Image (cartoon, rainbow, N blue to C red; front, side):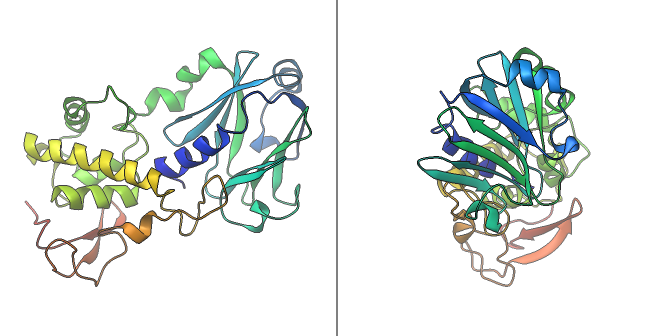
Length: 289
């Protein structure tokens, strides 16, 4: 599943291409992937102009002039591919990113009045596109449960600590991965942030000092911003809006570096399991407490 930087990378690419496009025709072949009443599609999508592309947590939102929005979750193998005078795509790096479309993985096709098209491809059929009134989007059950955006300007280190302390008896890695605490942080960025803050991932939240959570707040924001700058961590499952693999993992400091020296102290990085996930730590820099 994509993490926040991968989805943000796709959003930023599509935001340069889609606004101003008018939807002329909609096709779909999988009801679960496009579970929208035909009457709503006709009334609120056909003829609608795209006015913006947003992201909330790991979900993409395309806002329409009809005051409706398309809420898109790519899940494991989803792709969004734009074909017009230029070709852009993001998502699972299968042949559909560069091949002739539609193909057998195409679930939804939006054709615009200028002849360009946006394809939603999904090999495993876990992803979906749902149409909602824009005003109702914040009240969707998923968005009601998800935590704040860690990169939001108004999300402070005090907010971060307060959110974490709602899980005092949880280890810090599990708390970071809990989307109801903060949005969009997955396994890669949790490991990288904890290494940067010199915190062992099994440390209970209640045992973290204010200084430690302040350092972790800075590291989470630094790592997510770096990953966005580098196009995400997409060495396997996700690519950016130009179909290029993300480069972040080539800059990773601890993730997937087990058996290699810690770039900070030279101690051999190890891989264990914390919060049910493969976890990379430096035994010297991140001592258990």
